[in-house]
Length: 368
Picture 1 (cartoon, helix red, strand yellow):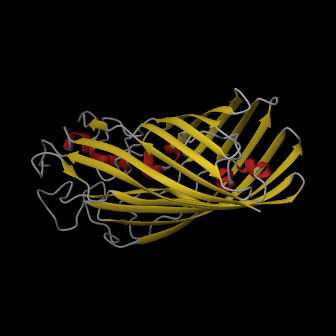
Picture 2: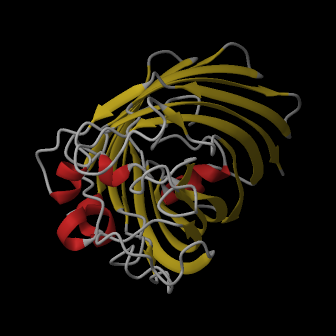
Picture 3: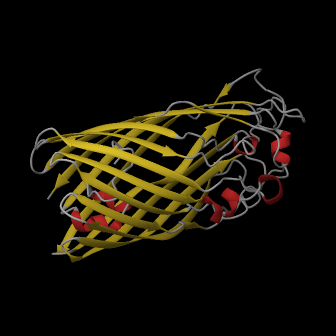
């Protein structure tokens, strides 16, 4: 799915596909997969406020947090004809920035309002059932562990009690999915993923006005087999940030980050060169949840990348062992604070963000 731009809500490619749509566990067979990778995030900022925020470097400043490990793993087991059980472990979100100078204090390097590290690991146990030969449905139960360490100030520019201390929060959620074959060439699928509700970080209740939940999503997808060797997939997903207070609330008055709901479009194609070798390519467009009136509020959370170009391949050495490789690249995104929004917006008018990423993963799949 990484090689296909994230598309493939209908495609049982490997055991971690159940993390996208739990119904796919019914079509995956007895198999296990381990995927490891790394990605690079080149994030830059320029602070140019007129109300006390200086441009601390006289131009662009690059975040020192720029290299991140990535990976997932899963096991799928057929209980009997039409029933399957799956366990998947995968990143649930997160990110990090580390600026040399504070966002709000003139040239300050004292560990105030300059960095954040947020990590989330999810584990899903899923059950899938096949009521007939054309249809599969699935239910997944999600457990999550998140850690947060930041020196961010709250919306009143005050220090919280847990500043610069690693905080841990556990959460849970669920996922419902289905896939149906219209005919031998065409399939469709739907999936609803609830929020992954997290307990609030105990020492950061001023910085985050609610639990830092993973937002709910709803997705539909289809694939079409143009030939027996070539398959095209299209997925559309809606990310409902507005239901998570700390993500969507107004930064200056409610202590949130002002993120909008977003729509993600995923396009992918895979072609079977031979029985053992497949190649893939894809494109992913996800709207930035941050608009030009919330740039300064998101200097520590600069999730503005929108366009992703991907490619991948897999090679089956034997009936049991398959090696996979994927990679992606994004053009550089840019956003500038208009200063026409809330107090944060006016305070940081003219501040700018640049964000560009690329990364790769390698996987080993075992059929048993």
